[in-house]
Amino acid sequence: MEIVVSGIRPTGNLHLGNYMGALKNFVKMQHEYNCYFFIADYHSLTTHPNPKDLHNNVKQVLAEYLACGLDPESCALYIQSDLPEIPELYMLLNMHAYKGELERVSSFKEKAQSHPDNINAGLLTYPVLMAADIIIHKATKVPVGKDQEQHLEMARTFGNRFNRIYNTEVFPEPYAFNYGSNLVKIPGLQGGGKMSKSDGDNNVINLIDSPELIRKKMSRAVTDTGPTEMNTAPTPSVQNLFDLMKIVSEENTSKHFTDAYANCSIRYGDMKKQLAEDMITFLTPIREKIEAISNDTSYLGKVAKLGAEKAHDSATKTLNEVRDVIGFRKFY
Ligand code: ADP
Ligand code: TRP
Image (cartoon, rainbow, N blue to C red; front, side):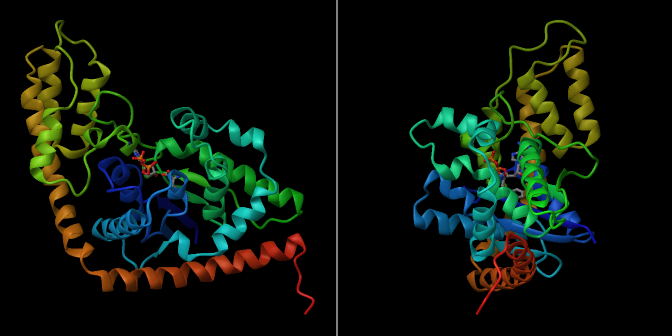
């Protein structure tokens, strides 16, 4: 059976972009493939979180994974730092990862530009750690949003390079995956690009956001001065709202507002109110489950333990093969 791996960094609450780009696929895939889903807490260290925040964020994301429908019996659901095999493979892959290629990765260039005071080696080698996460289970499918495509290309590069250097076929090629083929990019509320935590809390709708907060964030969503000519294409900020509507609203609601835009009768205030109510309907069952699960520390502990055991079995197998082909053979 094909193997699937994916993870999300625990940097706060998960948002609708994470859900549509990644989690929704996880939930479906767990019944169709051999799945390994994890919380990428090592990756979150590039920004130096304090220990209490790190712990709370891991716990929160674990509860959010479960609330969205991940079943710890159907997949391996684990915390990355519970698997020492991952940093070991990362270190081995680093020996064949080159400074030049790592410096050309767009996520590195963006972060180096936005945080020039913290260009650490972990940030530079982020794609190597991500490759280790994926190929340690010999995955071929990786459910992620469009922003992660280049990292998948790097994972293929590192896996293929290892195979070639050691004349082996240990690692298959992993590809980004989304049901319906195209990778998705969910827009944010501030008129710019994708919904992302790094653009501030007002740009995202979190799965845990209360109805009041959703209404407040939606009322502040960026629009424009309104269409002045019939049948013109919406500006990017308004197109973002239409795109969000396609996800959470009924088809005829979307059509009502698209038609109103086309004939210039649209009132953005009404559209944003409707969108807020549809988001609330969409997210309420998830929010209620998160609230119920996140206080159940003993259940979360059992889930993490079971996941670590399953992931450990698969990771040690691959690592033993890797150590053997490299030439680490015991003589005692
Ligand atoms: P953020 O940009 O908020 O920090 P992450 O980078 O932690 O989010 O993303 C975790 C996962 O969610 C990745 O698989 C990513 O591709 C997906 N994802 C995040 N934001 C979006 C979005 N706006 N649209 C689609 N997928 C997204
Ligand atoms: N880089 C991913 C992100 O920012 C998170 C991640 C780490 C990941 N390791 C992974 C995703 C392995 C898929 C597979 O969202």
